Image (cartoon, rainbow, N blue to C red):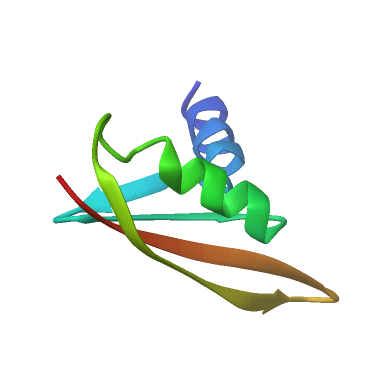
Length: 72
């Protein structure tokens, strides 16, 4: 049972978005995916003021981490 929970956490890690302050950050296989995942955390009615993405090399492929800054 413990292994199943750990496996599920690892699988979900790729699309997890983190929010703190007025920023939301997420990772994904493309910039569009990571941006969309981060936008899911932005409160309804908030104004997006900035979006930045960076490429993270993992083995022979890349992942993207995007951060959205917003004002409430």
